[in-house]
Image (cartoon, rainbow, N blue to C red):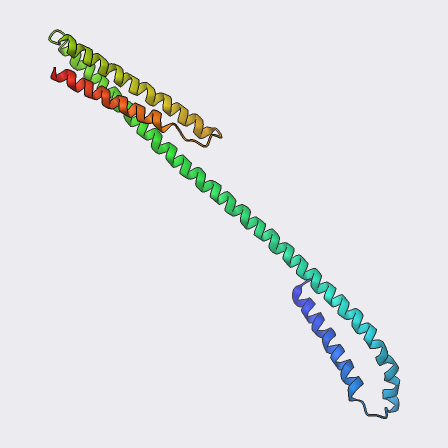
Length: 196
């Protein structure tokens, strides 16, 4: 039932009721013959008016209940959409963190590989002229650089597994920091071996 039609029906019932009341109160003290004939019929208007008013009120309540249910449903749908948008935002932020961390680890692994190749190439060119201390420091640098590469690849694998799984942690930042520390130690040892 349309709400506008319901209001028009209510207005019509109210107008009929007002007209009936005016007929009751506007008559002279001595009713004429036609008005006297209407008097018994007027006594029937009270129960009819009460029934019509009850019907209209019930229809209005039903319409308001339907509107309230519709508004509750719309509110629930908006809440669900908001929750989904929040989840999508969290997933996007998580994906960006994963991408940055994987990029950082790839840079560390690439730098460690280039540093290891350069240290090995330098050691091979000066193999005969290196002192035992220089060789030991160079070997420590190689091992540190290789360990940095290994740690970077391992952490990348863990991050990939955590990103596809239900784990809330993206990765172990200490392991990524350990790879960076091993890279710095390895490059420092390679540089010291060059100076010895």
